Amino acid sequence: MDTSAREFLNALLTTPSPSGFEQAIQSLVRDRMSRFADEVTTDVHGNVASVLNRGGSPRVMIVGHCDEVGLMITHIDERGFLFFDRIGGPDPACMLGSRVRILAAGGEVIGVLGKGPIHLEKPEDRGKTVKPDDLSQLFIDIGATGRKDAARRVAVGDPAVYNAGPVELANGRFATRAADDRVGVFVVVEALGLLARGRAKPKAAKGKSAKGKLNAEVWAVSSVQEELGLRGAQTAAYAIQPQVGIAVDVGFATDHPGIDPKRVGEVKLGAGPVLHRGGNINPVLEKLLAETAGKNKIKTQTVGEPRIPGTDAAAMQISQRGAATAIVSIPSRYMHTPVETISYDDLDACARLVALTCQAMRKNHDFTPR
Image (cartoon, rainbow, N blue to C red; front, side):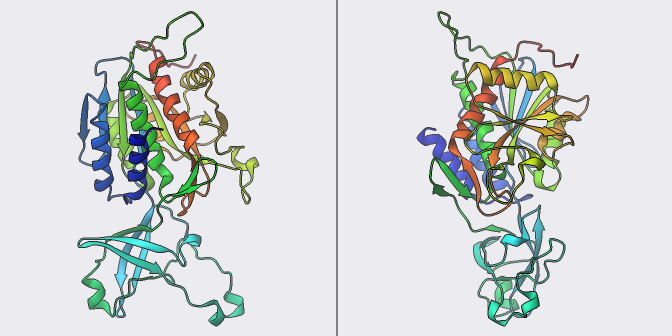
């Protein structure tokens, strides 16, 4: 990963954009896409889409969602404490004692999710977890002296995110809030860059030159509101009408304590992109991804999907006449917490695999299962 790409990734990870409030991060995406794409557009929902090789065949949509889970202020009490509900599905177990960034009209306001001291809790209440459907016992303290003081700084409807930026870990790994799915957006944009710069050429057989001609029309999309029900991908797919769709999202790593690989498969950080099999996955596209990975010595992992996963692939698959879809997942530990953990090696491998798969598509490539 070169310096420019690393700076772009860091900017994505440090810019708040809870679902419905993605404007700031989409500005970063537009700027980066404009370096590679023939055209960059933004629709009324806020999706940012760029196209390369317009008029090519097949028409491919590669997508990662830029929104993150968060909180929204719903009430300010007379003492100036803020009450809230969830945007998407942040884990309530991680909230107590956390710091948050409230995105207020006058600028960011820092708050903390307070909790009474354990010394004063009744023995039967110690260790109880917060239920997702009852957050009324939680509150945010911004240091206000009362309702009027708080209301001068924040307003009902203001969103908030965890105040937890990226930190470097050992062995080329990092932890951050909002890896879901900033890393997917990063992969999609970097794959576009690889294609535009002609660096997505497959490895040549001995004695032969590699062919790097791009036949496909490739749309790279940073979608919005995925955490609220794949809403951005629905409208983007309707407009683009892709014949092929690849969703890049995070997937469950199962190589840490507290998670059972028998439930969702065996997935390890640093072991490469995750390919999926199931009803949401077109078998021809699945085979193309696997063969492309094999030819280019990209390590992959495979999981089974007996149901339709909640990714943007589900929206693309059934848009209008339908599309051949697949999911390429980036292994992630601790999803929907402030410390989602990712491997840099997996990001590089995912970007290469997505770009090379687009490169491998023939003109009028038939993805009809037979």
